[in-house]
Image (tube, rainbow, N blue to C red):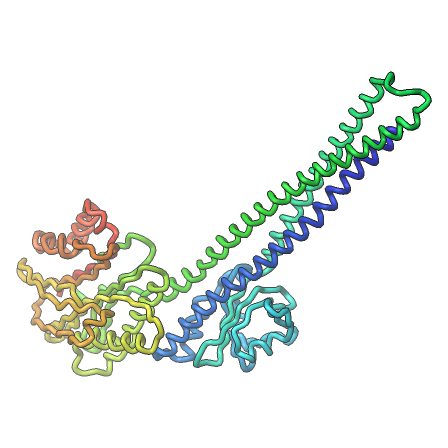
Length: 513
């Protein structure tokens, strides 16, 4: 009889808590999964709209509809498809234009793929959704996987841009959490059932230790009352356990909210894709030392973000050398600065068809292209660009110089001559009416030139490495070889106690004719 009571008590309490825990965990985890899916769609929407505007700005600036997808494919190629990635579709024939898997570019979307709108719950063919060209978020089903997707059209094109997030990782994480919760509830149910049996045992023991209180003639009635009291006690204990279960469920809810915060941080880490795009678009520095009798490049970066650049080009019987830098406070401004300075590639190519060449034409053309881009863009991203430019005629050694603020130093017979430029940074609206000045100098064999570009890490900083250190240093070492001069400049920079200057990105070109 006692064994039956213990078994029933144990089984009842265990089953009650285990069943309640099973349904409660299913409810809360399903709710959290749905909430997370909606949050992921919103994050995809923000990224998709930002990237679509970026492509639209490239199109307005004059880039061809063939060059833009090619650049985007280079940026997304090789990205991990199991995380977040970008796709570009032709919305009229559902052809993949850009995809992390190069083998999938140029293929058409499978007819079996479908799309489920996350707001309305309606499901239809993915091709129909792409053909409509309307911004839409939901679930993208293919035979191989299911993605959380947000798609937006790119204005002025027949493209649909989509941001994908593999839902498999989310489902696995929720499933793992479910296992943990169920194991926890099972342990809780087992412990609670043990305690319930223990209380029943104590009640029975107390009853047998006080037999004198019972009357032999009403033994059955006393037994019934004892059973009733035990049942009441068990129910009270069960209620206490239910209250404890509710408290445990609150704890589970808090842990689930913490899990959502964790996934939010994971979403933010997906911005690593943008870092990959920045790396693809970063200026490609090029300095051909064979163009000069002797030369060096001194380039220092305080961090991984590159805001300064340099390059040389041989155009017919002229050598063009450009040093520059641009301001950028965040990733969006940095990508904008890279995009604007990329106009220099087009400008330099055009110099091969111009006669005569003028150094001042290069910053003038760059400023006009940037103004055109800003006038055709809503809420344009502002960058300030500084340039130092020389064009050297290789036959008669006539030098042209132009720039936006940094001087040119010429050393002849150990004497330094400074050639200043007007302070006309590109990107300031107040400078649009002023013309860049083309300065000339007749060089001789053995002359040494110094060009500079310096991007200050702190806004409104009063000191620069070029203005406060370089001129005095170069005047002391004009008779040394250029390699020795570069070593002296490096030591001066590294030994500087000015922390603000240590954070600047600096490019110095030394050229001997």
